[in-house]
Structure formats: C-alpha cells, structure tokens
Length: 467
Image (cartoon, rainbow, N blue to C red):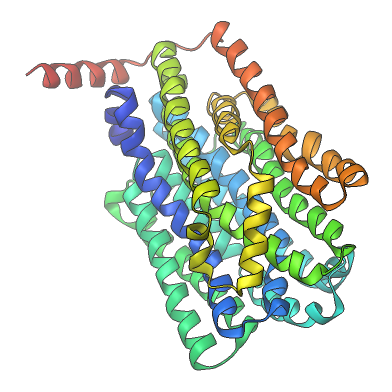
C-alpha cells in the first residue's frame, strides 16, 4: 500500500489543497445521496401519492442504521490508514484494510438478518400508519437485503479516500447512482412496480457498487490488494473505538427522523406532515453531503499530519477546514431562505407536500451555518485518534441535545417546538465542539516526529516548487 499521492497532497499549500481534495469527495457524496433521493423523485413524479412518499420516509431511519454502520467502519478505517501512511507503516495500513473488510462482512450479515426478521415489528414501533405499512414493506425488504454489499462498497470507497485516490471513489459512486436511475426508469416507469421497483433498483445498484469497488481494489495500480493476511495487534480494537462515534452519530440521525415521525403521527393531517418531513430530510441529506465531503478531506489530511507528527500543518488544516465549511454553509443558508424552491424542485413532489417542506426548512434551519463547526470539531478528534472526545461531540448533537429537545419543546410550542428543537441543537452542539476544538489547539497533544520518508517528500516538493 502506497502513500505517495497522499504525501504529495499533504506537503502542498493547505487551503487550496483541501479544496482540491474535497471537491471529488463532495461530488461522490452528493451522488451517493442522490442515489437515495432518486427513489423519492421517481415515486413522487409517477405515483403522486402521499402514501407512497410516506412509505419511503418511514424506511429511511432503517437505511440510516445501515449507513451508520458503514460510516463508522469506513471512517475509522480511513483514519487508521491515513495515520499509518503518514507514519510510513504500509503493512499496518494493509492489515487494517483486511480486518475491516471481514468485520464489515460479519456485522453486515448479522444486521441483515436482524432487520429483515423484525421489519414489521420495527415499523409498528415507529407508529407507521396502517395504509403506509404495505408499501413500506415492499420498499424495505429489497433495500435491507442488500446491506452487506452496501456496507462493503462504503468501506472500500473510504479506503480509496484515505489514500487520496478519490477518483476511484467518484467513479464507483457516480456509476452506482446512474445505474440506479436507469433501473428506476425500467422498473417504475416501464414495469410499473412502484415502491417495490424503487427498492429493487436501489438494491441492485448497491451490489454493482460493491463489485466495482472490489474490482478496483484488485487492480495492480490501486496498490491496495491484500494477498497476505498481515496481523497487527490492536487494529480491530482501534477500528471499533474510532468507528463508534461515527456509527452512533449516523444512528442518531435515524433516531431523529423516527422521533419526529412519532411526534407528527399525533398531529392533524399527519400523512401530509410525514411526507413533507421525509422530503425535507432527503433535501437535507443532499445539502449536508458537501459538508461531509469537506470534513472527509479535512480528516484525511489531518490524520496524515497527526501520524507524521506535524503539529503546525495540522493546525493550518483546521483553519482551512473552518474557512471552507463556513463559506459553503453560508451559501446554502442564503439559498434556503431566498430560493428554497430550487432545493425541492428536483423531487417533483405534489405542490402541497413541497410547500409544507419549504415551511419546515425555514423553521428548522435558522442556525444551519453552525453545523460547520460541529463537523470540523468532531472530525479533528476522529482524525487524531482521540475517540473519547470524538464520541462526546458526535453524541452531543442527536443524543444529548436533539432527542430531549424534540420531546420537551412540543409540550410548550406544539408542532413548532419540533422545528425549534433543530435550531437549539445546532447552537448547542456547535458551541460544545468549538470549545473542545479551541482547548485542543491551545494545548496540543504531543505527537510523534516526522518520518524520514515524509521529510524527504516535503523537501523534494519544496525544491520542485522553487524551480
């Protein structure tokens, strides 16, 4: 496993390098989110049914559970790989990739069995309306049966990202999304399979993404093959510890959606509110993906600098990440309040559903720009291997703040309290993350010295720049 491409990026000027690395990651994450939103768009356009749209909305928390496991394993693997390459330990990186792959297979299989066996019970626990239950099952079963390939594709794409081989990541994700669109046209428009066709299209696209990722891994030029099962003590433990914050954070998003759906179930016109909230969440997932792309690029560079022991470049990378994420968040914030129809037009939902979703957006996203601080602070501690602080920040958003807020606020402000819970959560989580980040930068942790390979790379790049 080679870290040459990553070393070259890490030695270049920080601010433009972060943007250059983030752009393809952002593109791949947006297309990954679009792959999920494609189902909603086709169902909205060709069924024009609140019932069908609500069916996709109630399955979304379970999809987030699967994504949470993939994010946890993939994010922790990326941190381990980048730090190992920064410390010039390719054997450790190869061992982590091998162990993470098998861990993902076993956990994915267990999760598939659990979710498929208990799906009707889970939908009842989420207070799914009776007339939504049947289409929710039709959509949920094929999607959940493809859990293992979905997790493996996510894991291996994170391995590409950790080596700065983001082109491979983009190819896999974009191809999977386009294939999903093609399958939706065939299964929904051509064969009129409705929500079952949407679920089947997603499942097949996920299998294709896993196959393509595996093919790239096996190619000689990817430098990521694992002919030998190299064992390194403590790797699985570190993968679990670093993956836990990411897993719980993503799981918290699913719990957040489920909690809001439960609150909306007791309101007047619950079906419209649930469908509009599902549309809002789909939009937010797409909007947040570029922030996650910036955070992923930041984590890649920060982990490399932490492994190399370069505290100065680590701090400059933090400042660059804050600049990029805040700029993007402010741009989206203006769009939300000036031209929100641009964000929802692509879903082609019924006019009443879109109008309600826009109302939710304007109420729930008042403090959206602060979300950037949350991403950067959490990513900093994850990339530097400080699982405890990363866990604290990731848990704060959805568990320590949102879930209590969404239960308490509606008692005083009815349905409006649900949306105020989003605002209060963004403020509280960003404040906690900023405090932890300032303290960490003020009192940096001792790191290992740079390796000779890293120093030599930086010298050669500096000389070439001078020439």
